[in-house]
Amino acid sequence: MPAKKSFPLRLNEDIYEALRRWSDDELRSVNAQIEYVLREALRKTGRLPKPPGPRDPGD
Image (cartoon, rainbow, N blue to C red; front, top):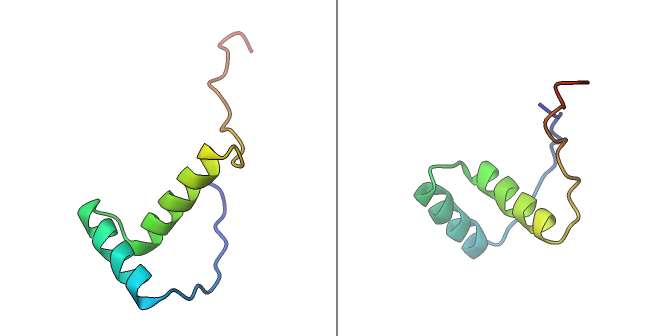
């Protein structure tokens, strides 16, 4: 698993509460929900490196 970087994040209370409700609906922590939202946005815009594909058995 890749290393994780910690940093402080300040959010408006309304945004935090909306994220908390959304994360509760999807059975995630708020932190995991923020990571999910960011990862999806990065993936959709082509800014996230593609994960390595399955290895060819002949390699």
